[in-house]
Image (cartoon, rainbow, N blue to C red; front, top):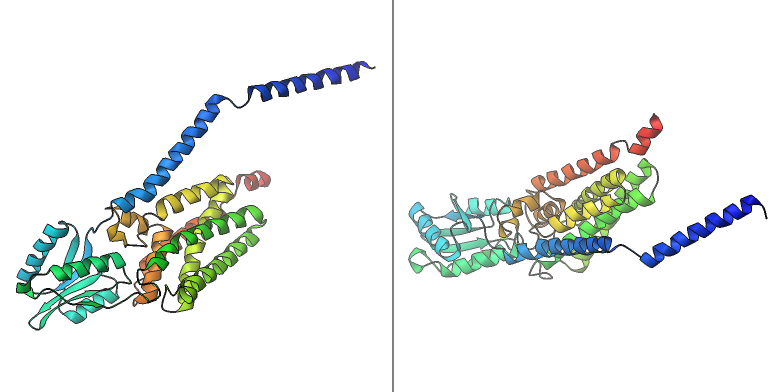
Length: 341
């Protein structure tokens, strides 16, 4: 037996002994404690993000048009303040019923109180927000008789018969976010070549939009309007989330997927206002939710499905997120920078 053979056996025996020692010792308790605290903190954030907005939802500065003399408007405003709170509705006087209808169609207001010598009427738009339409219906029944109440309710933009509560559109937000995250992650982690990654993201966004639109509109009947316009909005929504995921994956690798999910799922979904309207989300958070792709997609989809449009602000938000993701993706990675030197 040579000296080298003896040395090799000694070293191997040492490595085996060290491995056995590690197996006996196991994972340090400090690391286990850190994992437990991390999971607990994550669950706390998840529970808070989804429960707090639901438990604290209510009307905050909901824009409503009013066709009535100024003293009557003030009287109605005082009644609303007593029943719903001072900041519940934002009453906006308009000239006549035609102006009120135009404001609803342009999504400037959620409804209108119309009072005149021939009687009164409450105009609502369930497609804009079923929760706010129900709130205005209750308000119509409580308008005092001396000013023309109780008011009959006319729904100018009713929800489809297949989805009278508007659950279909609200439930499409989370699948849209998941589709965007999966599309961006798959393009960045499973495809090589920047051109192929972008092409894959685009194809996945279109495929996801067609599937979501087919389920929501053709099968469930939860959407109206043009199938292709709705699909285009959904494709832009998926692409905006996917581009951010792809850009962060190119920067951070796999942790970029988690960061995208943190922003889009834990913040974007609960504060989107897709089910009730951003004015029903706690003050400030509804506006914040409209600056993220889930909320912007829901608003744009409502606008193109039931109203004259007014989708450009929401579409602009989606385009901005798409550009942000593409800019992150276009920046040279550390590996590329090192290779070029």
